[in-house]
Image (cartoon, rainbow over the protein chains, first blue to last red):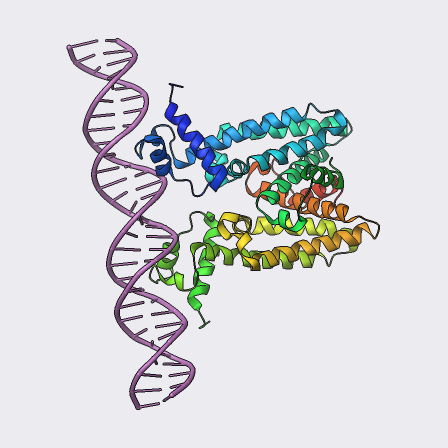
Length: 190
Length: 190
DNA sequence: CGACGAAGCCTGACAGTGTCAAGGGAAAAC
DNA sequence: GTTTTCCCTTGACACTGTCAGGCTTCGTCG
């Protein structure tokens, strides 16, 4: 609490702002003002404006990874569906943060090895799942393609939900959970 | 050429900039300066900075729609794969523009009926395709879920390609086209 | 022909932004 | 007790989007 409490204050305020108003309207100066410090104070804890986005993304990947690992504790024949559901539900429950995680211009994943590590870990979880599901005979190409397909469908469903178009076209979805599962079933992936 | 040539000049410059440097670094003033006009001139052709993004998105949806319609001219049993491939290839060939199309904060699709119309048309194309593919017996719920699944996998694959993580994890992909098709096959959708 | 009004563009100004530069004050290390 | 280090401050700069108002140029109508 003592150690760099300003960093936490600003980080939390940033997460809240992103969740409510999205990433782009986030102002470094206003963050500082709201925290009651000078406009330069945040620079002692984050190198850049992008630094705070990197922190937000890192937190997001950590929590998403946890959610996916938790989904793996489902019965074997329901794991795929549980993974899909966990991914999409996380994205919807943390829409702003989720957007930041996949905005390369904001968090610059290419140059942030710690972000890559978490993203890699999440994907490895997925590849392992696919490998055991397809069995020994499966070729590496099939495994990669199927893992990519699963990630794609989860990611696509999440982003299309968040950014609007699907919500409007599909119409009011009484039971979102059921819809997600039925999307998984319609693809051969869950 | 005479009629509002400045609008075209600025629009093209904006598209080029978005393609090269992404949407967020696009400066209204610099656009004007590059066109050799005052910093207020663009306001006579676009209401906002977002106005130019709306124009970019509209152009993008138009061209994406054309690409999808063209893909529908494939043999019936290859249509699904062709749609997937057309969607992803368009996104990769027009990465910046594609990002703008699905950034609700930039083009504000909720309040832009002309954008919704194009997005709806694209989705209707997809629903029709699914309907004829599943046949008469299919329930409306299954049709919607399968259409959503197809859109999700195409959209997810495209965005994961563009924003990096997939490219890195999948490794160098010798034949991207083959990879896209194999992703489609691994799901039951193509 | 002359008045008028709109279209298209300009100059000026304002609040707000990210970030570089330099200083200050307290606490900790030597 | 001096010096170094950490955290924060004030000041400035270039740049942004956008509101306000003025100035030509041109088509239309009385």
